[in-house]
Length: 423
Image 1 (spheres, rainbow, N blue to C red):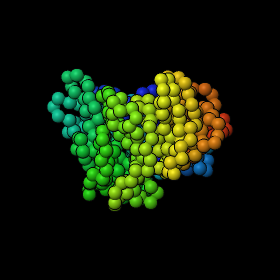
Image 2: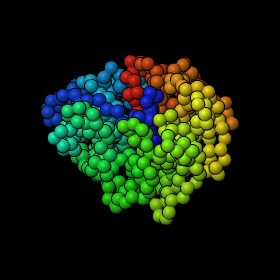
Image 3: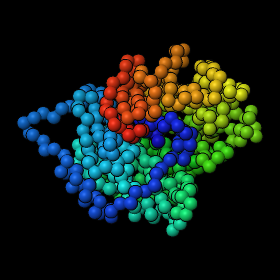
Image 4: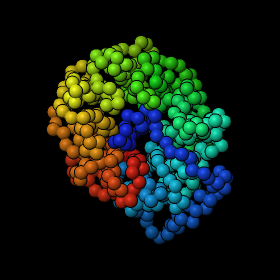
């Protein structure tokens, strides 16, 4: 979180954002044996470099895309054919460092890293560390992980499940590991952490929790509760964590707190806040939204605009665009089952939404007619890369599109939602 792009599942998005769906751990050999096996496999796989040949170079300003194809990790950039980085399978959830040098992924229940040239596979977080996070009646799994911007520090949360029932929930903890020198460390124990958002200057983390925001330095020190709000009832087993958007100056951040009990008080407004690092929070606006299980309010990347969905009557929905002056424009009026606001583009040029069918995505800007995000039909998963560049995953195809031009194919047989990119 706080990363340069986000990947969005278009089915049960609210639940996944709040809770982080995970799968069961796969039994694996011991960590030492597995690391040796993986390193040996990769050493055999990486082709020798012929000194007389010039390696192909990516096109200028080309995104780098890491993705999973048939269980293995691949890397793509314009001007270079897709390169296979692993051969041992059981790879999922790739994450690229901001400099494109390292790819981290899940394998055999742990977190692994590999260089972008396919060398130096290494275990970052293994079964022993995860087991230390759980009590004897639980199992711990990775819930979320990503690089801190501009660094090789990888931050992650865990998910705790009962060994008896299999039921579980996010631990609301926070950990980190240096991908160059793996030694995972706990920053916040269960119930004390949450979803991290990094300040642009790299000096602070705003950690979103169900009832407030904790501010700390990147190593977990100097932690303090900087903002508190009523917990938002979802009338279900998942909880709402607000999105935090930092000011470019790193002097404060924006967030939205939805109505805490919207079924009991349907007219209770959501509230748009500015929270300075020093001083008192200021409410910028109050507005009535649909419940969070219909649509989250979405802040633009600079925090000065937002889109939200209102629900003025049965099967009636409106998509609104609001700015910091509280000017409120209705963008879409829809009669149907649902209307959902999606993520903004990385630079805030466009916002996205869909009506009923989460595979039919539209992008729009103020004063412009909404257009389909995909030029070929459905979109199962998508990720904004920069201002007008988006990755589209439909079925097993992964495509890149620079709006409004047609998209082009990167690869086929790509696992659903299993990709990451940097500009």
